[in-house]
Length: 227
Image (tube, rainbow, N blue to C red):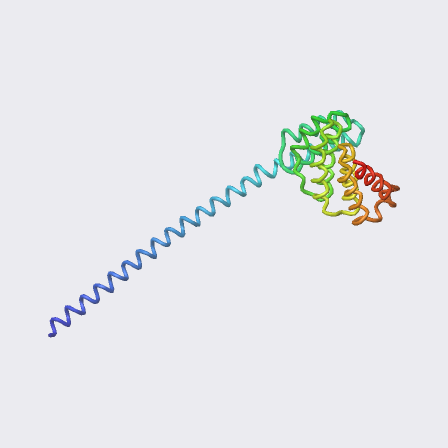
């Protein structure tokens, strides 16, 4: 009886020891895993910091310096030289400076009458801001109007209206542009609808800008009914 108890006790102790050994091994394995994961996280952080301080930071500064030079050249009235500088920033650099340079290049190209090339640089521009972004879409529409691609212009002016987010100074301006394109397309019902929307949503816009929107609406409505 005593022998059996001893054997049972020893068996129990061995089982406990085995269990403790297994738990210890698991803890050690977990520590190794945690250490490996920690080292991996540290490595990623080091890579990110290296990119920010040694690559991205200097890259941003270089791009900002380049567009600053172009801005100064433009302010001095040297449009053609400034255009070349803006185009270089847009083509060769990244970051926000390149984005703005693309838009500035498009504006100068439009002023020169080079509408196709202006569209090329507008395609590089990412419209983010409410006002500047909507103006970029409008400029794209203007390019298409000058190239007699009116259906493309319609889409651009619609984008400008959407991007401007009901700004009372800009949204009705883009709506009137769209109305004129509808008129050129002979779509007078849509033209009239645009004028009607301007009168309804922005009743003060016409008088503030010496535009008789109601008269434009009446004419478009008559032309629509005459069809």
